Image (cartoon, rainbow, N blue to C red; front, side, top):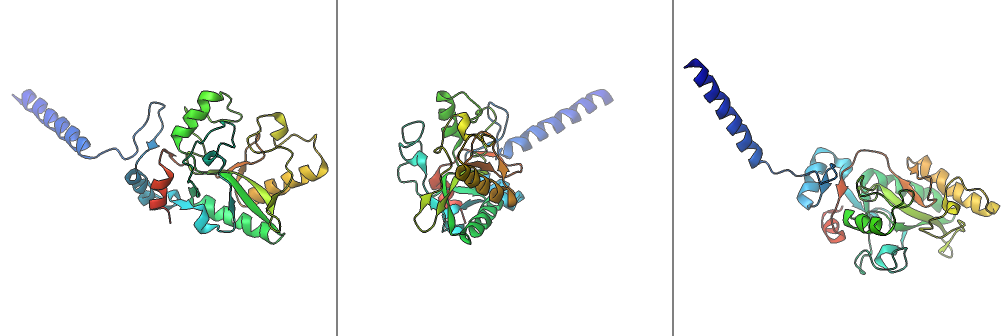
Length: 239
């Protein structure tokens, strides 16, 4: 009898545990790759409630002097087609990354220079489409790992002369998939090397990390979830 009662108690506890688990929806479910993928505003809000650094912040609102030239909202990119809605005029990053980017912009402004941003936040679904065309992790993130852009911590950018809004010569254009775009490529004119050095030293001074194979790509360190939210959804939430 005692054995039967023990089994009954264990069974009740197990059923109660399963019931409670069913009542608590998973706000950050794992996808087929095994990492958490946030695809709803509520799920993002839940993570922000635990860590305010995970807030996605409008680049326009915090850094209004920065020029946004979002190439994936045009056909002027390596995919040769729109990857974002054509009316996309803003982008987002996690709060600490945006605040650091603002400091970069402020320092460059004292030199008569500014920032032009080609890309920042990128929905996970877009990274999947990129990978279908380019299977090279030097230039395109493998969806199995998620991208810094998907996490809201990566930014693609260059420096402009604020008097003319003309980009400084960096030796290659954006999304150039050759060795010439690598950070350690030195067979370039002195002015190009100096321009890349200025971008690299200013970005790293305020905490960004260099991406070795793309002179325009920098990312903010930290543990952040992969997002698959639209720009409209983030617009509703961003501060």
